[in-house]
Length: 345
Ligand code: GLU
Image 1 (cartoon, rainbow, N blue to C red):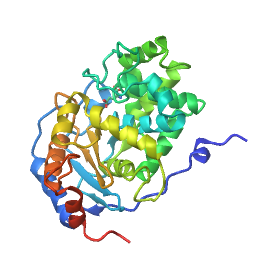
Image 2: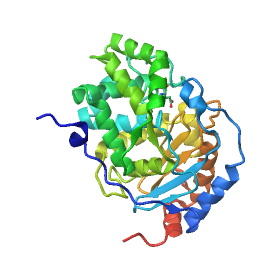
Image 3: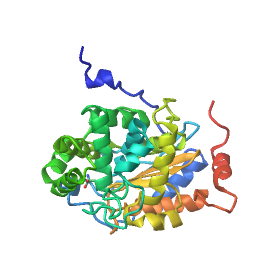
Image 4: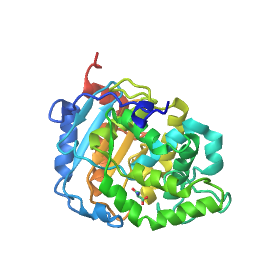
């Protein structure tokens, strides 16, 4: 008997609705952060994928999900947008889980590249992509999943990302078509990867899964839940479902910390100091280990391709809540816990 994708990868349990941000002290901080940066209209929409240049530029949503299962959100936090490169972090995690760290490291490195995300360049010492957060490394991670699932990469990716979000995610067909029709640079990268032996098999099928994974629709609430699943060592704290393998989560967070924010990653680690990943759809997810995750959405991008308001909001929240991994002012987790009050039953 052949199982359908739905039967093979069952629908994730739906998560409850978020609490609005004007309730409780953490919500008030989130709302004030949004209000502070809402008037900022700097930056520009990504335009190299035609469909992305046509999105509504003004929305700005913020959401926080905590490891004790709370989801707090502002206005616009449930508006859909395409996940784009934020998918790379989660896809890397799945690849690690499927074939193990050593097999993945043989095919894609973990060093920051210092080049643009879509650069057609490999590590000169290994002839492999620098890391899984640039396109070359991300396409390799998708190829690993394609191979390990016998050609069912996208079904598995969609199922796992849905389980991390706590609801069934869907594809934006128009963005997918747009990416697929215009993705000549990614095609060039994938064929070069094939040429150096980093990926094998059906290059077009791997690319198709990659274009689809980038075109999955998410919201800021979804990103917060997906991040909180990493923060909660692989278990979705809202649905209680174990989604990712513990060791794979650790390795994923390490790469997000050093490579997640394009060419701004070093500065981000310095200023904000949490593992994060952004995408050209305007989403950013930031993970505070064992505490919470923040999801943000605002589509106008800065010169480094990160969301202008997203970066500004993370800087403020990081400062105000003491989220930096090397925070030494003794606020951090105890401060967030105090703001949240007693854990939920
Ligand atoms: N689908 C996009 C690409 O591969 C993702 C870019 C991004 O978000 O960085 O070009």
